[in-house]
Image 1 (cartoon, helix red, strand yellow):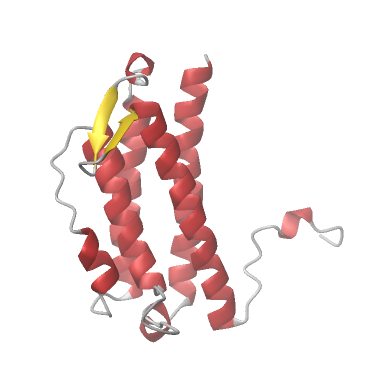
Image 2 (image 1 turned 180 degrees about the vertical axis):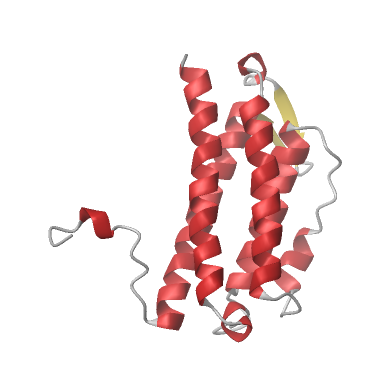
Length: 164
């Protein structure tokens, strides 16, 4: 059934993408994690906090029914305070919980409508799709920032190289 494949792929993709972020966090110092080029930019730390807030609000709360406790402004206001390992643990826990919610979501509920963030009227399928797409976008930013900060080839696509 296509709906089951969608849910499985969505949960699996969040875990793959979060694994890349966890790898990046393991390569960066605390100073690098909180580095900003200007006040108009977000640090890797801000992006990780933002992803935790977004995933929790949209999936764990919006889809799963848990209380919505998000403070979105604080995700972007942070200028440090959490070490890379703490950010990694927080992300791993949130994504693990979200993947469980997605995997357990009955396909019959995918068309159910919810209001998320008090303004977005969406189906549960759209909420899951939004979160995976949003997560992928910020994962790309974190990967790019990690490459800039470390000058390292992270090797995620080494298997596609003709010399591999």
